[in-house]
Structures are given as structure tokens and as C-alpha cells.
Length: 426
Image (cartoon, rainbow, N blue to C red; front, side, top):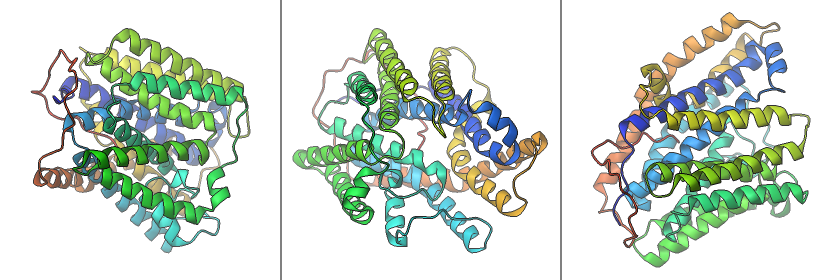
């Protein structure tokens, strides 16, 4: 199979800018607890800033991740790239946070009597949110859905259905709508409650390891087996063991596959009519789900719907900015967005554990927080993220030649292979 074109530099700038905006909004959402609590209480019912930021992130991931796999044409090197992209900073942040807890500065969440071993194993899979284990850091929950998406993308790739992104997005969105219409409400972590959290973590961790190894094997039969095993497990965990409502878990996956469908349209692998139709279905189903779900203690449908619609519009505006020059400030923020996302809750934990949260809104301290956070994230990116990616690329280059699937019809008409590879976000 011919490798699909690399993401051009101009398009990469747009994606970086989108990540930069999303990262700033997520940080504002979390830091407002500490510095702008009164303002936050007024804003959240009208505009859920957290959901806005993560939906933009999910759309960007949906656009980039399948392109990364298909460009390589090799599941093995894809997983190496993901591991060295995600884990180095993740491990550093978790280590620092646990050290702060030992020093009495930060407080670790209650894990409900789970052993340290099962908590550690669940987090090591990145699927802790879907394995019935509270997140060590709250922001880690999105990585569980990212990991599920990786497994589903690999599954589709191994069975040669990866070009069906639009159909998958529509199917997931319709399932979400049907689940709300039918009143399908499962208990939080229903599967863990049935078989037990410990056994589920052990069995799921083993299955994921087997799935990744088999999907990376030379044997075509093993590759298909491993891909399908990982994809089925990811979907089962989202359906039966999530902590967000069932419809929202399905919408998250649909949003990521919508990002993939838009990538295919922009690269000539599909039509814009198909991509637009997919977007309409996903948006209508998502908004309908949120509206029917109604208001709750920690959920207001207006805030969620406004955030979701603005996230889709933001991503669409980024795609439309083909000939616009992207400010270097935004592309730079996008480059360090993963550091911004993981480091800011640790810095907030230090502040909450020392000087405490503000009783009155203090915009100056909010701005000062960003002024401290961003240079720190530049440092973590340069000292941890970038070297990790370099090591991953070196390891991938030293391995035997990538395994490529049999040739598929090439519908690509616009090659941009002279451009550099995309800067993936974990």
C-alpha cells in the first residue's frame, strides 16, 4: 500500500493552534476553582469550558492519529511512537505528584480500598478511567478515551476498514442517540461491579498486552487477531464500564472518528459532502443526547451543548484557515500543549496544598499562574517530551522494516510527501 501523504506544515500549524487554544481553556477551567470560584459558578451553567477544551483535543486527535498509523503503514512502529509520545511525561508527572503527596503537599484521591498494585497497573494501561479506578490526576481520564481510540483505529487498520471513518462516526453517534432514547442507563463502572475491579484490571491488562503484541506481529492472522481483540475490548469498556454517561462515551468516540473523516475529505480520500453529512449526524445526535439527558447536579445541558458546538465550530474554523498565517505564539502553545495539560494540575495541587484557594476572585493571581505555568511547560517539553520522542523514533528506525498490508486502491490525488511528519499529541 502506498503511504498516505504527510501532514503539510501549514496544516500542522493550524492543528498546533487549535491545541494551544484548547490547552489554555482547560487550564482556565481547572485554575478557576482556585482563583475565580465566583466567576466559575456563573459561567459553567452557560459554557462548560472543560468540555470545550477536551472536545477540541479529541477532534485534533481524530484527525492526526489514524494519519500517523497509515503513514507508517506499521502497527508496531505506531505503538512505539505512541508509547514514547505519551509515557515519558506521564511518568514524570505522576512521580512528582506522588512525591508531593509523601511530603504532605498534595493529596492523593481515595481509591476505594483498591490495592496499590491494581491502581498502578490500571494507570499503566492508561485505561484506569474505564477499569473502575479513580484517576490519580483528574485530567488523566481523557487519556483513557484516547487509548480506546488508538485500539479501535488499530483494529480497523488490521481488518482493512480504516477508510470507513465516516461510517464508524455515524454508527457511534446513532448508538449514543439510541441509548438515550431507550433510557439505557448503566451504573458507573458496571462491569467492575459485576466481576470485581481487581479481576477486571488483571484480565484487561493481559488482554491489552496480548492485543498489542499480536497486532504488531509478522503473521497476518496474528495481526488481525490482535487488532480485533484490542478493538473489542476498548469498545466493551466504553460501553459497560465508563464513569461518564453511556451516551457521552459514545459521543467522544464519534467525535474522534469525525476528526478522521474530516482528515480524509481534506486529503481527497473521501468527499466533503460525506464529511459534512457525517458532521451533521454527529452534531445532531450529540446535541440531542445532551438535551434529552437534561440537567443534573454536575451537568447542565446548555453549558455542554454550547461548549460542544463551539468546539466543532473552532475546529472547522481551523480547517478553513488554509491560507492564514498562524501566529507563532499559538503554534508554540500547541507544541507544549501536552505538557500544559499534564503539568497544570500538579502546580495547582501545590498551590492548593500551601496557600490554599482564594475566597474571592483574583484575576491577578490567575494571570500569574499562567505566567509561571507556561515557562515551566516549555522546560518539561524540552527536557522530557522532545527527548522521549527522539528515543522513540530512534528505536523505530533500528527495528526491522515496517510491515505493510496488501495494496489498497489509492484514491489520494494530492501528494505532499516533501513535508515533515506531524507532531502528534498524546
